[in-house]
Amino acid sequence: MTSRLRDKYCIVGVGETSYSKYSGRTTRAMGAEAIRNAIVDAGLTADDINGMLSYHIGDSTTGPEVASDLGIQLDFFMDCSGGGSSIEALVGLAVGAIEAGMCETVAIFRSMNGYSEVRVGGTGARSATPVRGAQLLTRPYGMLGAGHMFAPVFMRHMMEFGTTSEQVAAVKVAHSKHASNNPKAFYKKRCTIEDVLDSRWICKPLHLLDCCIETDNAAAIVVTSAERAKDLRHRPVHIMGVVGRVTKRRGDSYYNDAPITTAAGKYAAARIFGLAGVTPEDIDITGSYDAFTFTTMMQLEDYGFCAKGEGGEYVSNGTIELGGRRPNNTSGGQLCEGYTHGISMVIENTRQLRGTVDDYCPHWSDGIHSYDYSEGGCRQVRGAEISMNIGWATPVTGSALILRR
Amino acid sequence: MTSVDYRGMRLILPENDSEFLGYFAAAARHELVVKRCSSCGLLRHPPGPGCPWCTSLDWSWHAVSGKGTIYSYEITMHSVQPGFRDLTPYPVVVVELDEQRGIPTPGDGIRIIANLVDEEFHPEAEANVAIGARVKVVFQDLGEEISLPQFALSDEVPLEPLWRFPG
Image 1 (cartoon, chains in turn brown, green):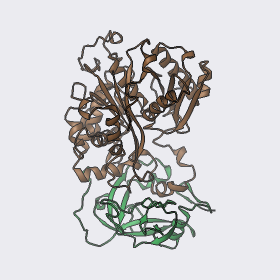
Image 2 (cartoon, chains in turn orange, brown; image 1 turned 180 degrees about the horizontal axis):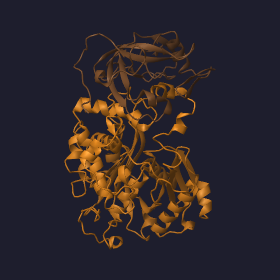
Image 3 (tube, chains in turn cyan, green; image 1 turned 180 degrees about the vertical axis):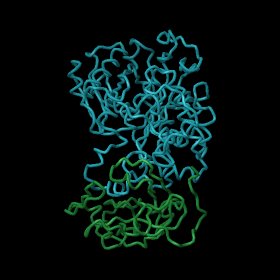
Image 4 (cartoon, helix red, strand yellow; image 1 turned 90 degrees about the horizontal axis):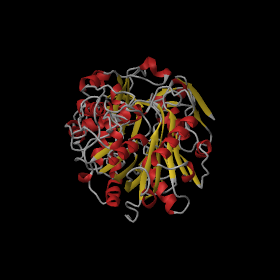
C-alpha cells in the first residue's frame, strides 16, 4: 500500500447545524447551512469550492441542489449511498478526485432529519413497507432496527470474552462526561453506570442508554491540498491515511463470517496504520463509532488498541475519558452529542487537533483552555497531535481515518 | 408472485427471486434447505447466487437436518414493528446448523436467524434461551405457499455448557 499521499491533503474547514429532534426544515436547508459554515470556517468563499461529496440513505438532498443554494459551480460531485463508515471513505475519495485533477477543493456533507423524518432505528411507518429479498430472513422474525440486527454480535462477545453490561456502560458514561462540556451536544447531562443499567431494555443485551440519540442535523467538512491549506484561516489538519469501507468476506450476513465477534476493522487495521506510518500507541484521540456502546468497544479491539477480548476492560478503566490516556469521542459522540452517521466525530477530531475545541472555556477560539474537565468546563485534549476515526456501518463494514496537526 | 400478510407486513416472493423463492417454497413443504455449491460442494447461507468459497455460480438446494445449536441470541423487549408488540418479549436466535460446523475455516458455520418458539409458535420463555442449547427446526405456516422456518428447543443433551445472559 502506498503512503505517497501522506500529509499531502488537509481538512481545512468544518461546520454543522444545531442538533435537535425537530429541525422544522428540509435537509436541503440544513445542508446549505452546514456547508456554508464549513466554508466560512476555512476562510474560503463559495467560489473556492468546486467539488462536492455527500452520503445518504435516501433521506437527504443532493450536491447540485445545495451547491445551487450557495452559488457554487461544481467541477465534480457525487452523492453516495451509505450511513456509518461513509465519511472516512469520502475523505479518501475527495483526495482521489483532487489527485485525478477533477477538482481542487471538496466540500463533503451529510444532512439528515434523523429523528423527525427518517429514523434509522425504524418507525411504525417503515415497518409497513413490503418485505422482500434478504429482509425476508430478518423482518419476519421481528428484527428491524440496527439494535435488533447487531445485538446477537454483542451477546456472543459477552459469552466468548466475559464482557459485561457494566463495562460497555462506561462508554456512555465517558461520552456523557465529554458532552457536558460541549455546548452543541443534544444531551449534556452526565450519567452513571447505574443510569445505563437502569434504563429500559430495547433488545437484551442493549439498554436504551446503550443506543445512540437519533437527531436532525447537517454537518460538513472541506478538504483541499496541503499546499492550498497553508494560507487558510486555521492550522491545517493533515490526512495521514485513510481506509474506506472495508468488508468482511461475507458482507451479506452479520452472523455467518467467523468470528462474528470481530468487526470489519480487523481487515482495515494493517492498511490504515501502514498508510499513516503510526501504531495505535501513537494515537492521542480516537473516534470509535458509537452507534451503540459496544460498537465503540469492539472496534477498539479490532484495531489493536487492546487485545481481542479485552475491550470491556479498555473502555471501563478510564482510558477513553477526557483526562485519560486516549479519550474517545470527546464531543460526546452519537451517544450524547447527536447521531450524524459519523461525520461529527471527524469534525470533533479536527477541532481537537487545531487546539480550538468549542468548549466552555471563555477563550477557546484562541486556543486558550483550562484543561479542567469538570462539568461545564474544558474538553480540549492537551497536546493532541494524532487522532483516529473508526467508522462502523455494520459488523461487516468499516472505515478509518488518521489525522495529525 | 407469491405473497402473504404477516403481522402487518407483506412478505413478497417474485417469480424471479432466485435467492429466496426456493428457500421459502421448501419451507412450505416443511423442508429446511440451504444452497450447495455444485463445484466445491460447500453449503452456504444466506442463499446468494455465488459460492463465497470458489466463485462457482452453479448450485442446487440441499435439504439439511434442521438440527442445530443456539450460537447467539437476543431478547427483544421493544419491538419497532407494531405487529410484533404483542409478542414482546420474544427471543431471536442465531442457530448454527449441525452441518458444516467449523468448515471451511474454524468458527465458520451455517447460521440461520429465527425466533425460538414453543409448540404453539409463541415466544419461548427467556429463562429457557441459552447459547449452546440444542434446537430443531419447526415450520410456521403463513399460507399455502409460504412458511417461516422457526426453531424450538429439542430434548437433546447440549454438546457444550449452556450460557445465558445474566441481565
